[in-house]
Length: 205
Image 1 (cartoon, rainbow, N blue to C red):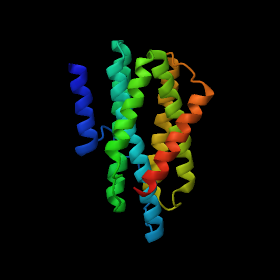
Image 2 (tube, rainbow, N blue to C red):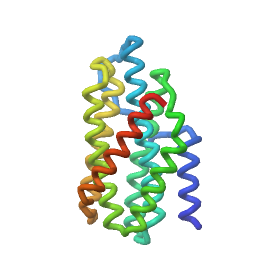
Image 3 (tube, one colour):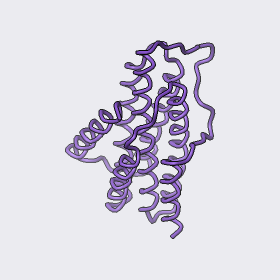
């Protein structure tokens, strides 16, 4: 019952509450962001996509924490979720600064990610950790592409994305160290295709 309540609390907080970070938002000292209309719109769209990724991360870790019977692994997922909560808060704050809105489909993204995490968890802890490994690797690659696409003068967004990228890489390494199973190639390809649909849609909606 406690696990179910925690999962429900995570969903409500992620979708309807104002997120608060436990770490200060990354900045580039001495770098001031000044964007024109087109660059501001592009940065807003890209940060909306990144915010959606963090909504999904909260869903994934909540469902995987609920699925495992290993208390140490459950704590591992909850700690990772806390760091992803920082990312959620940073990206939402940056959206506000850019005058952009979160995705209108966030409840749908959350529900889908929760279902995938639950399925991975039901297949066993090693598969669940393997799912984390591959997800975080793909997110790291996605964030690297955003560092290339963000306007060069958007120092604020770039600092946030760079820190997120480092955190995601570490999460993948920690999942591997905890015994994560390397997923088959077709599963990885399916995950990439699903992520492409989500990111393309979230760019606009």
